Amino acid sequence: MHHFKIAVTPIASKRLELIQTMESLLQFYRPFCEDINLKESQRMIFITGTVKDMQQLKKITDSKEFEVFNGALSILAIKTEFNIVGNRELKKN
Image (cartoon, rainbow, N blue to C red):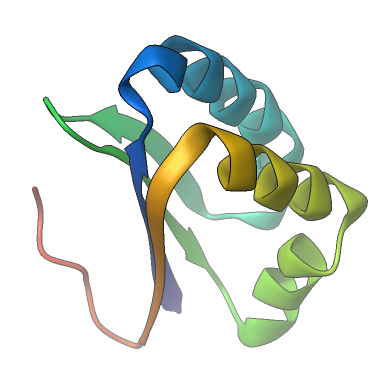
């Protein structure tokens, strides 16, 4: 299993638009993931997920939908971090 976390600091005035974009793209990612969730904190938005192997993660990152997601991040976010952890769990926020 591989766990991933995408941590996004949105532009304050674009937060709602970014959340809506992320929620719609999660529908595409669900079939490739064992688990995937969208979480919010006061300043950040997180997507956390689990895939069974790196091939599944590659299907996500090589998709047109991921390109759309990256484009949205470039205009709606201040900062984005993408972390992949193999064979162990991410800390709970």
